[in-house]
Image 1 (cartoon, rainbow, N blue to C red):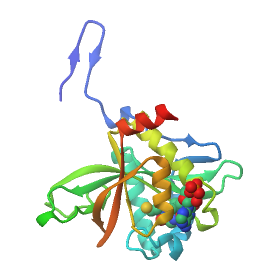
Image 2 (cartoon, helix red, strand yellow; image 1 turned 45 degrees about the vertical axis):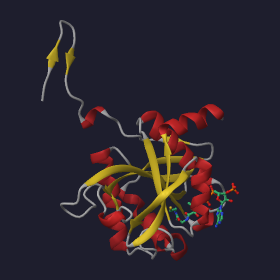
Image 3 (tube, helix red, strand yellow; image 1 turned 60 degrees about the horizontal axis):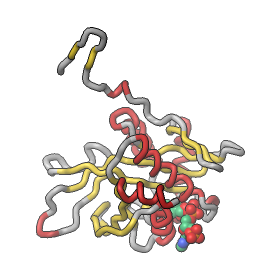
Image 4 (cartoon, rainbow, N blue to C red; image 1 turned 90 degrees about the vertical axis):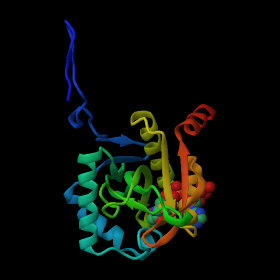
Length: 222
Ligand SMILES: CC(C)(COP(=O)(O)OP(=O)(O)OC[C@H]1O[C@@H](n2cnc3c(N)ncnc32)[C@H](O)[C@@H]1OP(=O)(O)O)[C@@H](O)C(=O)NCCC(=O)NCCS
């Protein structure tokens, strides 16, 4: 580690503590804030709905234990990566309605025999020894009673803009099950476009992505 001095200034490497992770974000109807341990029961209920679970992960409801693990991963990612899914609530009532955010992925760098690369969620998710590159995923999941209100699009656009504008990301990507028409519609409305196939959770997903240059074009055209 180095440190430099001039007559009036000191220079030192940045540290994690120099970056304040987003602690609040707003859209016209929704608020987003980091998850807390107290949100566990909300996540349990969200993850237990088979219709919500159908196109995420292994496509089956998660147990309380799996949800506990998920929440721990999210809280660790806030600390380690300054990234993670946020809790989404209605500004009017404060009721939680879903989650939306950016997650660090480990992507298999050299898939054998031209196979699609494997995606692994969270730091350390890939098998030990596998050569990986990092990617930032934009994700969203809402309670069924709040589907069809435009909430996912509203939140995903806010996270997209935060990712490019505040975090300076060069690209965002999402893995979407081919049959998940609702999610593909959200991705399209947010500006992500199909860019190939990936493997995750032993299944095939479509990769949709948006580069920072494309995002600048979108913002300028809006
Ligand atoms: C995918 C999901 C987040 C969409 O949330 P939402 O708040 O209902 O989405 P929006 O209201 O913003 O709708 C976005 C677009 O998708 C369309 N849409 C919504 N549900 C749809 C469905 N079941 N089939 C086809 N299109 C659908 C909407 O009509 C809208 O398009 P439009 O404005 O052109 O009419 C929600 O269905 C969900 O939580 N699903 C379970 C978890 C999941 O699959 N997450 C995504 C993983 S990749």
